Image (cartoon, rainbow, N blue to C red; front, side, top):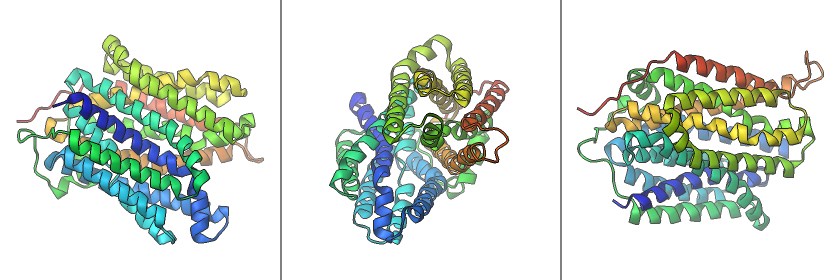
Length: 405
């Protein structure tokens, strides 16, 4: 197996998955207004509905796709998902009614398996001590896409509201073709697990994965931490505008700097940090840094100081891959897809809850009737949630590695 080409394909897939989100964001308001013929307020409502539908499909079908990859293989799931994703973008590009946009988001949510299946593939080709560092590479790829997507989407929007969707379709189709030629299968008969519907739904998958020693608590930490970390994409634009009087350009620049910081940390610093202190200490260190960053952002009143905190906020991202590495080493080889599918479902639920939680907190503490004016309140809420994660993690025993029998 050409491990380098396979890894390249996986990282490109995750980058494109992340880019696809940011690529279409700049044009979604105009596209919905164009299709519906209504104002920006109504477009925002439909935009929220479409985002919720996408997350709901990820929640419902993440374990199904993960279990399919444990049975049928990572290669076909990844390549077929990319092919259907290309079709999804084409559908969005030609849609003339809101119902076609809804159908498109349903398809897109179901087939958004590239990140979870990519993580399972990465786990397959990694030795136990390499998993956390390689999950860091996935995080770096996601961060890179997070930076490139909005930039490219904004540029392509100059050619019309449909241009970013056509570009995303070409990129997804091109990567599917690349994967067809370079991606070997990693699921062998030794670790292949028969597909079972009772395990291929969110509740069944959580029950089976949660039964492994210590994983139920780790999944709880993943859920709460995802909500806490969502404060950045959830309220950063509103926070920057309210607290520092930033315009769209400065907000975009600050988010880009944050994405670059995460890519650097997860791409280059994860491995030496884990080699030096181990995964458990890396989780505690990352979460502790996040608490400090959240508290500082909760009270900061100067925009340049907020930007100067970017390296600190990015460094906290070491917690995610280290936590993922611990969970991956705990699950057996024939459960990697099921595990990643379960994590996808948990993250989907968190991304449904998080926007409401952090934006409502921001609204409450910036209204005239607020007990205290505090635009940074959502970050303080995230600090409390992260402290909870630290407490639960420190009470969690070291899980033992489960092997296929």
